[in-house]
Length: 142
Image (cartoon, rainbow, N blue to C red; front, side):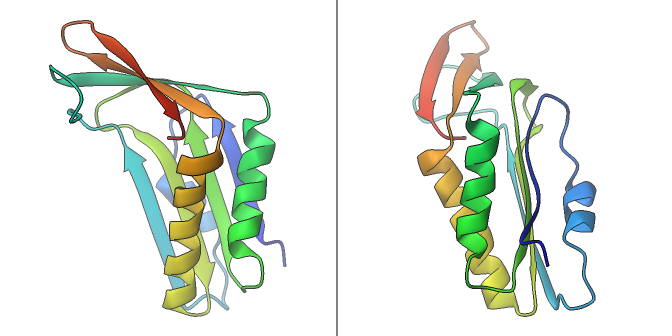
């Protein structure tokens, strides 16, 4: 069984259904999902957030595969994960993760580890755009 069925950096909209379908299995008693979306505010912003602009290092996709593989290592979990790049408006999905496993605890644990590792280790950066045109770079991670 392939542990990571999808690990992609994409410049097109992400589909939760595609990720859930990628991890589908008759052995999976649990499927957990995570969708990280662009929100309209940030504690550090003086004005409303209207967009995030994501850019990535050329090694981002292999790094995403490594992150998903390491999170699922030693489990029966299978993972599908994607991260968007480009300009995303409020409400658009920046990250989509689906994890399937025989039991819910493992599915939740692996899903959480994938998103936490993305935030820590994925070479993707975001520039926050506020309504007044102000922009701010927001470090590594999504």
